[in-house]
Length: 315
Length: 275
Ligand SMILES: Nc1ncnc2c1ncn2[C@@H]1O[C@H](COP(=O)(O)OP(=O)(O)OP(=O)(O)O)[C@@H](O)[C@H]1O
Ligand SMILES: [Mg+2]
Image 1: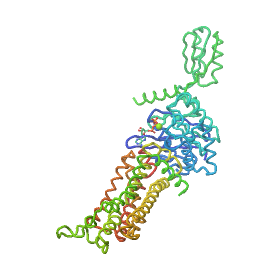
Image 2 (image 1 turned 90 degrees about the vertical axis):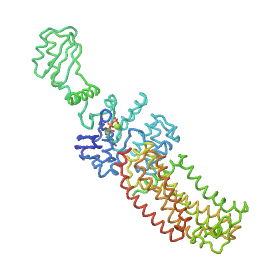
Image 3 (image 1 turned 180 degrees about the vertical axis):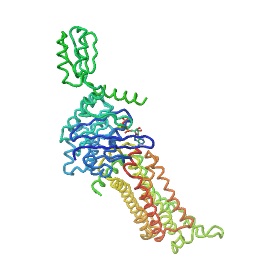
Image 4 (image 1 turned 135 degrees about the vertical axis):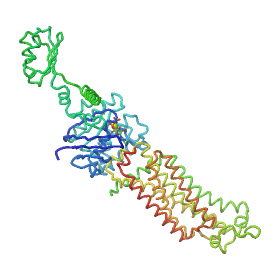
C-alpha cells in the first residue's frame, strides 16, 4: 500500500446529474491535497464516496488501503471529517458532543475525558465546554467540529471548506490549526476549498474539479507549466535596449517567445537552465539589467485560467 | 454489534429528546390523565355525586329493550352489584386499550425526534461519518425509543393499579385489579405497540423532513387504540387473555414486516442522499 488515497474512474450519478464523473488521482501519505472547484463541482460528493458514506455508481477507490464501499466502518475509524456544515448537536454541550463522538469513534473510555479536555483547551473552547452548542458563534462551532474531526487522531483528515463563512481572523486561526494538524503523525489531509489563498498556503498539490470532472492535478508550478507552456522570465532594464536584442534572443536555443516594450523584457524559456544565457545575451548587447524574475503564478491565476479554458473548450 | 456504540447512541437520543419540550410534555400529560384523572372520574366521582349504579350501568335496556352492552362483557361481571360491575367494566376492561396510547405515543415521539430530528437539525451527516455501522445506528435509535416507552407503560400500569385499587376499595372491598388479561396486555402487547410506533416512524422518516410532520403522521396510529375501545363496547371483541395474546401476535407480525422494510431504507447511502 503506497498511497493514502487511490481513485480510479470514480463516478457517482444522481439521476441525470453526474456529481462525480470518472475521477482518477492518487494522494501520497502525509500529503496535503487540495480540491478546488466552483459550487456543485462534486467536492462534497467525493468526500462522501471516499468515506464509504455514499455508494459509487462506477469506478474504484482505495483509501488507506481499504475499499470504502466494502469496508466503510473499518475505514471511518481512521478518517476524520470536518463536514461542510458543523453538524453538531445544538441541544447538547460542547463536552457532551465530543464525548458522544469520541465513544462512537472508539476512543478508549479511560482516555476520552482527557482527550476531550486537551482538544477543548487547544481550540480555545475550555470556558464554554459546558455550554450548549446552540449558543455558539459560527467560528466556535467550526472549532468544535474541527475538534471532533481530530478526536480519534485520524490518519487521514477530510476538511470540507473549513473556513467558509468565518471572519478573516477566525479563518486564519483555523488555517493555522489545520497546518498544525497536518504536520502531526504523518497525517494526510484532503482539503476542499473555494479559498485559493488557503489552498496556496496549505496544499502540496491541488486538483481542480468542475462539474464532477478533474480539470487538472499537480503542484502549482506543474499546473502553471502545463497551462502557460514553459516559464516566463521578466527582465527589468535600466534603459531601453538596442533594437537588435530581440532578434538575438529569439535565436537562442531554449527561448520560445518574447515581448519587449520600453524597458521591460519578458522572455518565455523552456526551463530555468536557459535563464543564464538570456541574461548573458542581454548584457552582451549593452542592456543594463536591474532585476530578473521567473514568473510564479498564483493558484488563483491558474484556477481562473483552467476555468476559462474549460468554458472555451465547451463553446 | 458494538454495544458501547449502541448504548452511546441511545443515551444521546434520550438526552436530546429531554430538551425538546414539544416532545415530552404530551408524553407526561397523557399518562397522568390515564393514571390519575380517569380512574378518579370513573370510581370516585359517581359515588361522590350519589349516582346509583343502575343509572351508570343499565343491566336491562329501558322499557324491556335488551341490554346495550355485549353479553360477553356482562358475563365478566356476573355476581357483582351494579356499582362494582361499573367499576370493573370501566377500569378493568373498557379503559385497558387506552393504556396502549402511552407506549405508542412515547415511542413515536422519541422516534420522530431521533430519526427525523437528526435530519431536520442537520446532525445526521456527522453521525454517518462515524464508524458506527448502519445496523448499530438503527438498533441504538430503536432502543432509545422502545425501551423507555415500555418502561413508561409499566410504570403507568403500576401507578394505575395502585390508584384503582385504593379508590375502589370502599366499593369492592378487596384488591381486584388487574384482571388476568392485563398481564399479557402489558408484557406482550405494550412492547409490540411501542415497536409499532417506532417502526412506523422509521418508515415515515424517509419521506418527511420535520419532526412535527413525523409526529403527526405516527400520531394517527392512535386510531388503532380507539378502534380497540369501540370494538369492546360494540361487542366485536373482548380483551380477555386469549384475545390479548392474539392481538399481540398480530401486532408483532406487523412490526416484523414494517421493520423489514425499515431496515432496507435505513442505509447510509440512502440516508445521506436524502439529507
Ligand atoms: N443527494 C443528492 N441528490 C441529488 N443531487 C445531488 C446530491 N448530492 C449532490 N448532488 C449534485 O451533485 C453535484 C455536486 O454536488 P457537491 O455537493 O458534491 O458539490 P460541491 O463541490 O461540494 O459544491 P459546494 O461548493 O457548493 O459545496 C451538484 O450538482 C449537486 O446538485
Ligand atoms: Mg460541498
